[in-house]
Length: 221
Image (tube, rainbow, N blue to C red; front, side, top):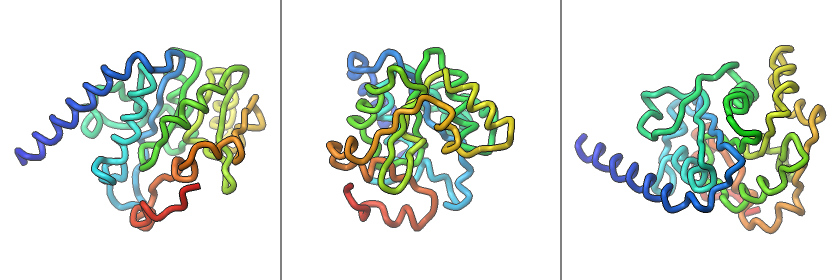
């Protein structure tokens, strides 16, 4: 037990030190939003704290967010699990869907843009994050589009998207994909994503034990 607390303290110190060093490189006009409210039912245990490549999945996402954003909000989490990280924890205004978490984070952000990610991404790319953020001007959202699908949970959203999100939530429609035709959406396609060598891995998330077992075996693009 003592070893566990010592390891936690060391990890927190490293996070704090890294955060101080990276402040000058942060994006000043974007808030980082990490969705942490999932119940992990399909996984059978808390997927945010599954350890992969030496660190919990959540901490991998948190690390690149702290590198890039001065403010990071954790949406849908509880203090017992996330209080030790020192970030603001926001209760979900519309619990039960990723769209609800996205709306909550955007609603509580104090600046016009957010970058959102889920808490269970083993390969989040800081370079790709920066590129997506660089495309935001003039759009309500910037969303990657791979050969397989849109990637709504590694994307940029503006405050101007809030009314359309609320309309969907109030109508009982929780499909984020149905949001984009209502907005000025900047799609970032396969060709544009190609310079990021591991972009295929950057959008991987973990929902089941089978997903977790496959980590490290995915295609690179």
